[in-house]
Amino acid sequence: MTGRTSRGWGGPGGHGGGRGRGKGGWQQADLPSAEDAAGWFAGRLPDGWFTGAPEVVVDREEILVVGELPALEGEFADDAGRAAAETGRISRYREQTREERIEIARQAEHRYGRKVAWGARLGGSRELFTTLSVPVMTRLRQPERLVLDTLVDAGIARSRSEALAWAVRLVGEHADSWLGELREAMSKVDELRKEGPDLG
Image (tube, rainbow, N blue to C red):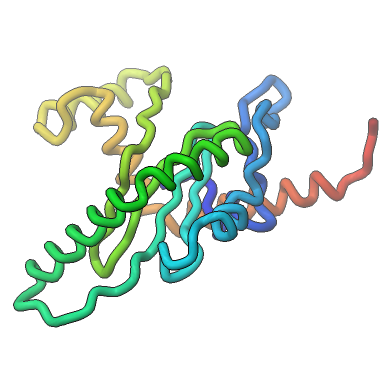
């Protein structure tokens, strides 16, 4: 995911508000800052839900909170058995915490002006609960459209929209370290901008 995380934009030292492209370049959008979201969730979540502070990923529309559940006890016959147990435990956590998560999400949405989605990790299993699917409009020239059409024709995607989402995920997976460096550099620019002279 390319949103701001507790290790990058969404955590301490990050800049949690959204941005928009204006005539003068990148400008701050009219959103509450979410730079303290990671700390807020770490303090607000009940003790015992997760083994440590959750991963908090923030963008302009959504805050995603993913935590590590306590390890399973007991032996399993094989990896498939362990994976099934992990999935079952995540499902149990989802059902048992539903009402409290709704209340926490309501408070966070009021504070940060963004929807809240949840997820959980356990061992080798990771599951995201209901998350936003936000339409993103863009204009593509023919060579770029041909890339999407090739993915559709090959059966990798069912539509251009799905092909574009697939391509974005692929870039995210293979350029994760570069994207992390880019977010860190942008965070430093934000800090320098805050430290600059007040010309008002």
